[in-house]
Amino acid sequence: MRAVTHVSDQVRAACAWVAGRARSVAIATAAIESYAAALPAAEAAGQGEPPLPEMDRESRAAFVVCLDAINFGSGWWPTIRKRPGLSGYSTIEAGLLERFREEGAWPAGELTRLAAADLAAVTGQDPRHPLMEQYAASLRDVGGRLLAGHGGSFEALVEEAGGSALALADLLAGWDAFADVSGYEGEPVPFFKRAQIAAADLNRTGVAELRDEARLTAFADNLVPHVLRVDGALRLDPDLERRIEAGELLVHGSPEEVELRACAVQAIELLSAATDDRLSPAQIDAALWNRGRAPRYKSRPRPRCRNTAY
Image 1: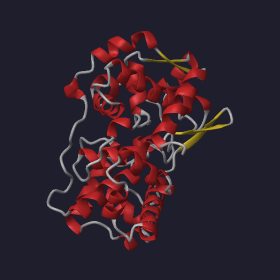
Image 2: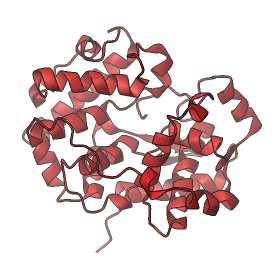
Image 3: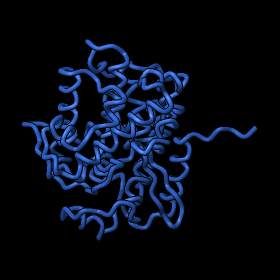
């Protein structure tokens, strides 16, 4: 019998392949050992606080899955209404958290009827902003998938994974709400950032007990490649560097955008190996994402791209 290949394995193999052929982005392999040695264990994300501790497990699972279903839009952050002192992502997260606390989780049937205006009300945005319909479409898909395959229950979705983060990521990767595959030299390159991070978030927050989170890859977005670039672990072609520094939007699926994400995933695989697996790719990803909040990283333009993947 052939071994089952999980989405995470597919991501890992595809990103290594792209990194080996990349022309605009390169991993500074000579710096990997020292960079890995400087990653303190305390900086890596561990068990998080359970979301909405006053609510039952179904509602907490619903919050995590719904938040990760709309965990995209970083290319639009400069255009949204941010709450004082909060980033774009934190603004969206805060709005969703308030909605769950005040009104509870959306039932699956209600999710299937959400419109842009509903998401605008929750997040405090203009309903005409393109993200609002994209968010609504993603959550409509979540509701439809739950009704069709899991009896409308988020807990049932989690239980179907059988305690495996890999299996849960596999399930979510088949949903339109979590779609994330690009192309490179005519070949598909899966990333599935949000499908994998949803599994990790459910595990870290104690909503689920998933035994194999360490086998997930890094969650390819725009901030982690930015941190690796600023720290010198990724080196960019001068033209790509110039475009990013000038604030130019990258095209989703373009070779350089795919290379940025893929090389970041591969670099983190190398970093994890250099720690003798003391830190998993998911932990290193979380460490670098949190590091990216520091002024050193926020003061420089990061790669921006408008898409529904991250």
